[in-house]
Length: 352
Image (cartoon, rainbow, N blue to C red; front, side, top):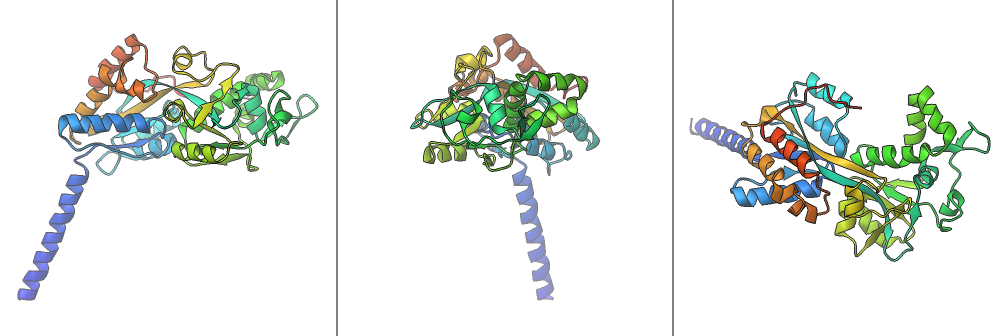
């Protein structure tokens, strides 16, 4: 009898321990998504945790696409509360959210970022055009006859453009699950694609073929997928002065003693050039909130207020010090009101 009572007690104690662990695990906010937004979200989480005395939100870098997949998988404490994204949510992702019961999604644009192509400070600085980038990294490039496409034969930057160094093409960048990769394909690769007249004309007649051509990166070892950890790319550039790397401006800003950004069409990546949009490869940054979790997971209102406060995302805020480019004042004010009133997306937004 004693053994039975002991066994039951052990089971009860174990069950209570598990339940307590689950409760503890969801006393904190869970955030997934973009590696670019990750450092901004992390510093907000740390400041919020210190100021409020509540558990510091858990931030995980999964990439924008991976974060959207997790975020849209369902409602409940088994699923993330917020996902960061270095691009706007896609219509297919929004519909996936809806089909899984994530019916109210709050969109928060937090600022801007530039996508940089950088190399070691020990190497010569580069001045690239978007056409150079497309010809260096696309899987298929124009042949000698108009309308002809061939497998990319270029192995050096000088072959792409005689004005560029005679250095091997070796570019470290994010995988397809990354919002940085999506934005790089759309802004840099496609931007270069459009500089070739017959390819630009293809967009009017066959959008799918145009996108396939302009967005598909070569897979012969010239472009190396380096995962979602942008700090790892910076480390690899330090070790290999020949290589170039693709990542967000904030990582360039935080590692200016190690790497330098290439100029794109003679415009360097700077705080001002990204803010005034003269730098050709810039993009908005977002996070998305699951409204159903507000009031269920403690601290979400406080975290949202901290993130959308002027001391955080304002022109002189601590996120600007981390390299995030602030929204214009009027846009910040409007976004703060929408966020704090928990206004969800209508589904009528212009999503791709």
